[in-house]
Length: 493
Ligand SMILES: Cc1cc2nc3c(=O)[nH]c(=O)nc-3n(C[C@H](O)[C@H](O)[C@H](O)COP(=O)(O)OP(=O)(O)OC[C@H]3O[C@@H](n4cnc5c(N)ncnc54)[C@H](O)[C@@H]3O)c2cc1C
Image (cartoon, rainbow, N blue to C red; front, side):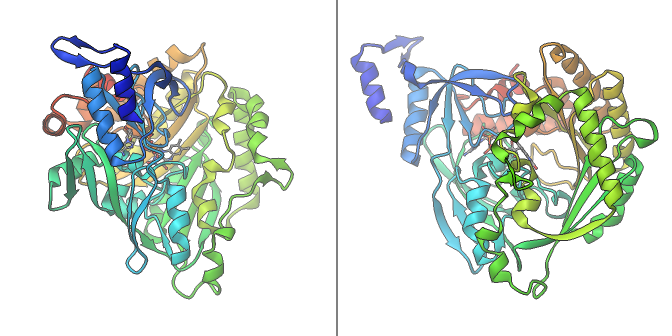
């Protein structure tokens, strides 16, 4: 299919020499409008959807001949511009979904990059395994997760997903495929994981999964009255939990600043589930199709729409917090999928944010500075009249990856609604927030980013790490064929 397009181009006489390079004009029917996940920005790209490594190689060749760069895209769940490549080629990898090898005795699996977390857990759960790290949505692909080195609600326990990747094959833009692990091509291994898709394209990823003895988790939830209580809860419960996540009401002020709910969960030890073969079955993991057994979830975003503004969200957040206060501490058993993929409960919930979409800002701050930095951030957002609508607190640990966002501390993910009236004010606010995060020795996360400026990235990553990454980029991709909007915005302004 790809070859014939090149032939058609030539037959049509659309080929020419440009600056000594053979130029192929790409067919107009490949143009597609491509959004950021949050819908706050759009671009247009030539989109290709290869299903084999050979097709991938052919597209790189086509890119070289057409003078276009190539961006990689998995499920397109990065909030900002990480999986966009305006006016150039975009490779959508969601057709590369084969399971290449599965060892249910040892929990090792080799996957093509387009396999989603949903496909993965559904494939392995009945054999008693679960992905060691999952994101808040199961629609992410394993290639996209590796490229961003994603973390879960257990980040302080098990690190990011890269710590569970045993090996991968990386297709370089030259067409060469290199195998990388902790011994072979070690430097590329620690840079391509978290390297946001600009060193090469993962074509095979081998992952070590986590053994589970039940399809259920022991879950505890409770509401906490302020930020200090939230941090104290984490400090007390981190040593005895497998997962913890906090939700905060960014509208609460004064003594109540940072109030919210926490959810923590533990795996069931062997023997604790009387009927594991039942609970591990997929039938017991499905998310419900309706809310309260009546409202189809597919239209729930329409009901959320009138509340997705400052007044409505203040009201909803307050109600959620007080409902939690009244019911007190709750303990129950919950299927893995229901605990992890809360954000998939309501399909298309982002549409409730309206046509301007949303951006996310997720700073990571060392443990000793996080409490004060996050207090300052929440207050500043309120002072600027721009409180965020969804605020999520997680605990993390440092890791060995070159472009890491990980550190011994906390992250606070914040969703900001974008409207024509507030876009510039949000950009100005984020600049102020960047300074708070940098002063607290914090870091940022490319998967969530829409606003980071080159000097801020250099300041937190360090000149040495950036230079090392650029040297590897030169080695893996000397013609700078692999690019994204994010790459150009931050590293090649
Ligand atoms: C609702 C929601 C919840 C989320 N929760 C979390 C969370 O809990 N934790 C977390 O860490 N993140 C979270 N994220 C962010 C998300 O996990 C990351 O952005 C992830 O990278 C998305 O995977 P994707 O397959 O959609 O990749 P995309 O967004 O399509 O791409 C991500 C990056 O990977 C590169 N890439 C894609 N495929 C390949 C490949 N085969 N080889 C090399 N590079 C490739 C792309 O160029 C891009 O730079 C969440 C996002 C959403 C929308």
